[in-house]
Amino acid sequence: QVQLVESGGGLVQAGGSLRLSCAASGFTFSNSGMSWVRQAPGKGLLLVSSINGDGSATSYAHSVRGRFTISRDNAKNTLYLQMDNLKPEDAAMYYCQRSAGDRGQGTQVIVSS
Image (tube, rainbow, N blue to C red; front, side, top):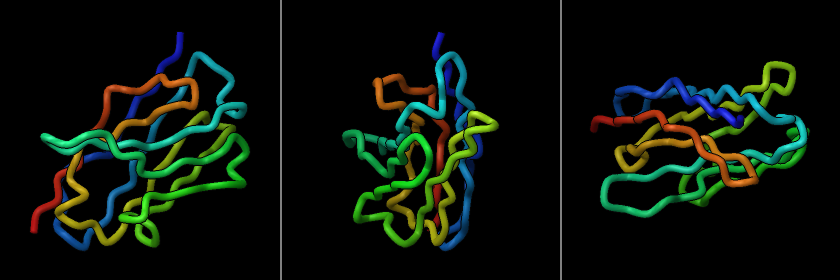
């Protein structure tokens, strides 16, 4: 079955960096577009960033463009999100999601001001 396991979240000061990882299994990872979505308390889901199967195309929400970088290692079946210059408004639960809709359990990001 499809499994998506996120890691790398934590507490960081504003201006700091975190790197999220998502280990994928149960499907052909290299054939699947992948995304990171986030949900802050009391707010809806935000599509943070997406990447196509071979990593040649990426997209970002306006609020994170220039600070976050999505990437993937198809040999390791792993998706990444490098988050730099974090802001308090980036605090949320971050989920890895594949194009078919499956989503992991999430990893919490807390940004202190």
